[in-house]
Length: 412
Image (cartoon, rainbow, N blue to C red; front, top):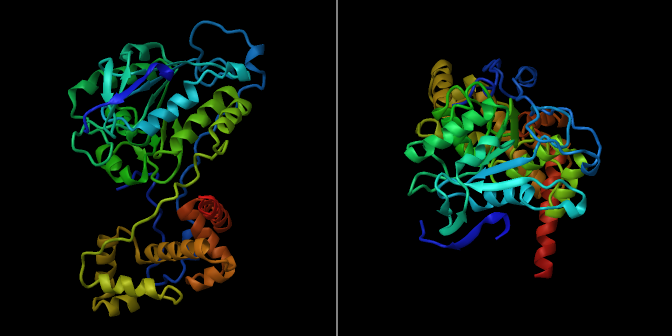
């Protein structure tokens, strides 16, 4: 019953303007696009405000009232409210409870006034079929310093937890979120909780993100939002959004670090046995699906290109293989893949490099030439563009994961 919750068994139940890459490439020369790719628009790094002073909580006198956002004070963040949506994602709800709902005063850390609320107090059925009881209604949002919205769904038969805004019971929540933000509170979402912020009108004109599986729908439903599809989290004018699942941990620790400092955030991270900090601008490690091509004249060609990435390509050559003029080929290619031949080929080279980084000990220079780049420097540039990390860092992350898996198997 930590956090005042009771768990029981229930019945089962396009891109924004800051995302669109600059397209300055000459389709006649698409072997690497080294020069043109340097001009691609980069996603902005997440906003990092100055950290508070380094005094401990015990050295600060608690004062009553809400302090303006951005003040360098340990005590600005006091009251935290998490909203349980219908069919809430239990893991993401648990993340908010673990970071902000645990009393850690015996470790010299601040204790938050934490509560979980619902539109109608009582039992809420999670996405997994069991129920969670919360005693508080939405009125606790009225004086909250931080409101967190984990993923949930108002679609009874939804495969994924996404609210589509059609449930009339959510209107009071939208109003509460707007009012809270207007008076200076932070509003945060985890994963597809971003759709609730969008329905409340809080994403218009702001950078935001969600789980990479939902970004296309987020762009479609909220065209005024500036959707960044592959970062871990974004902080834009007190509206904070994160990618899916574990990125919610990163977002919550980011908030703690900014408001209470690194010592507090690092202590909580150690207790949770998670990395103390992942930058919001770091890429989601997305298993990017291959583009499904419905054009029968292009599908075999794309398969052939993937099998011969180590060679050079030109639009006229590819057009001849597809039995089209160069102009018709470029137009159809854009329509089928959503990008230019140059960008698509270089993205495929990065994906092939990822596989080799994960599965081999080949030097980065060797991998670069094997997938069709002229050298390691060119691979690093494209890898950074697509994955927001270096090939070496990517390899180290996945090699550590593989080593941990092998260790677990050995002791099982």
